[in-house]
Length: 56
Image 1: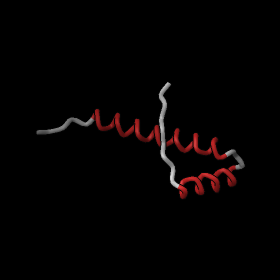
Image 2 (image 1 turned 180 degrees about the vertical axis):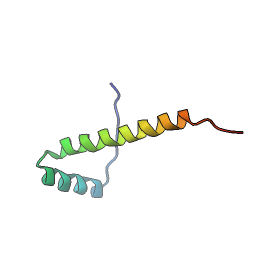
Image 3 (image 1 turned 30 degrees about the vertical axis):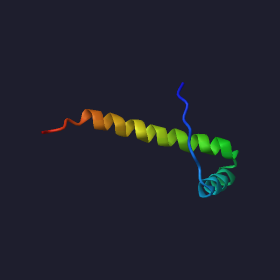
Image 4 (image 1 turned 90 degrees about the horizontal axis):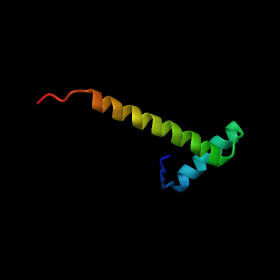
């Protein structure tokens, strides 16, 4: 299991609160969903970078 630490701004917290209210979830659940999506995009970008050969 990997630990990830994220620093959130006040604006980030307000956004999480609004999203949680829209989806009727707890803000921590909404944060976990958003973090999971961000990690998935990051890992996909890493794989794409590794697959593309660099021409010199």
